[in-house]
Structures are given as C-alpha cells and as structure tokens.
Image 1 (cartoon, rainbow, N blue to C red):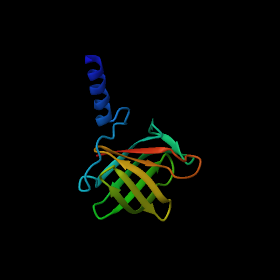
Image 2 (spheres, helix red, strand yellow):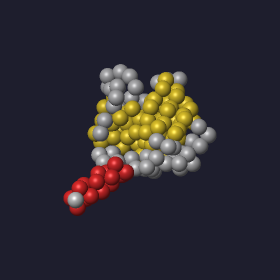
Image 3 (cartoon, rainbow, N blue to C red):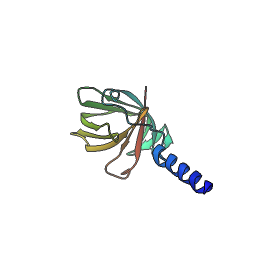
Image 4 (cartoon, rainbow, N blue to C red):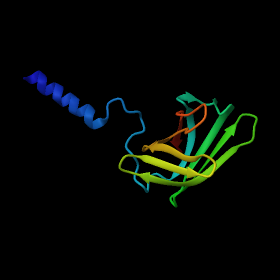
Length: 134
C-alpha cells in the first residue's frame, strides 16, 4: 500500500508541475509581459543561425503595454529586417497571438523569462524563435 501512495504522490507532483515542460516557467501576468526580449536561439540552436536563408546574428522583440509589438532581426552582413503589429495575450495559458501586415498571424507562448514564437510559413515553418527577457 505504501508504494502505491508514493507512486500517486510522484504522479501528482509531475502533473501539477508539468513534467517535460520547457523552461518558460509560468505565464506572466498581462502587466508583466511587456518588455524587451533578446533572440536567444532559432530552432533550439544558439545564434548565429540561419533563418530564411540569412545568418541571423541577433534579434530583439519589444512587447509594449499598449498592445503593440516590434521585432528586429540583424542578419550578418545584410540589412535589418523589421516587423511590427498588434498582439493579444491570454495570461491563463501564456498564449500570444501577434498580427502584422508582413507575416500575418504569428503564434507564440510567453513564460516568466522568455517568449517563443513559431515561424508560420516557408521552409522554416514550425521553427521556434526563442527570446529571453532583458
């Protein structure tokens, strides 16, 4: 009987804490989400790395409290790429929906220390851009 209680306790611990979850942490509140984030990785690989045929040396994501956002990617030896738009955020699950004229709809997830945005189309479709809060 004791072993089954221990198993149930361990199973409940992993269920509550999120076994196998990445290190995004708990979703931030709507007031804690805004800020400046630095691009840390592309598809799990550290920078510099390639995206859309360009080697990306660094990038910045700014999320403002007024519901707007901007993203700048700095490719090695090329002009910067900038994108901006509006966003909606659900603090209950950390889901982030970014809209822009350039890329259309981008989907992401926010945690207490990072934001991950998924590339929606093209050869890199499904690639995750991970930004960490400054």
